[in-house]
Image (cartoon, rainbow, N blue to C red):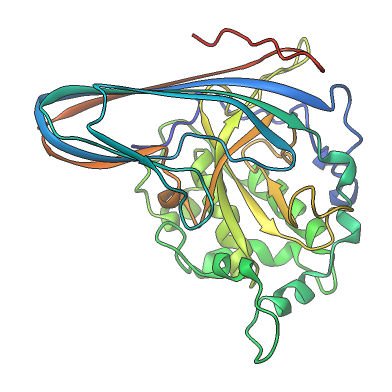
Length: 347
């Protein structure tokens, strides 16, 4: 299933969770109220087939992850027609995953996921200038006999959607000056990608090569995330792809953030020292180049992986079906207030 990104162009002066215009060291300000936020999401995927599907096997990454700062309060998944077999099994990255099969003829499939999540702000714990120099982080990710192996190493490797390209290092290098704290360099790189690439809906498909995205300097949120992931890996760093949702709640007179009411994608870099308490985020610094922000309580994380291929919301193989039509709809709203467990209607 191709990823969904919104149709609106990105704002050039958005309301920032991380005010990148002030410089990387001051990119994350003390958050305004609230420091907690409830989000309710409904994600509906519908397939209609030109002829009957006789047999289908699907995998879904739709249940949000549990994190110290992200608490899943409710989750409901409805599949029509009901599957003949279904089981939950986390993937290699610890993401919740559902595998299901249909062994009877059907000419349509609907998967409806509803989630309610409580998020807690991480902004006050972030200290970009206190992160380790980027060269030191890179050294920790290199193999040394007898040294402790860092689990983040697997995210240093190139992957199907993010291949090795000389242009990626050329893009990243100006931000990575000698001895610079990694968080400062990564935030600046995120800003430069946002400013140097054009967000244009439908300008790419999910199988558009990354080299083409780099050449044309435009794409959608998945492309922006892949570019940032690749540029960080080109510097010998561990970077991963994050899928999820974004709530847009702009003040009066300000534009909405790109990614609202659609599945969204951003990146994360392994960055020891970026957080005063690494229990907050496990040393992973998230970066949203589509919107030029460091994600906080308005970004809901569903899954992490090497690239889009690891965390596609819904994918599968079928026998029969002929042609198909796909419709994806996402609705994200606030629910409750601080200390209130009341839910918003996401129907």
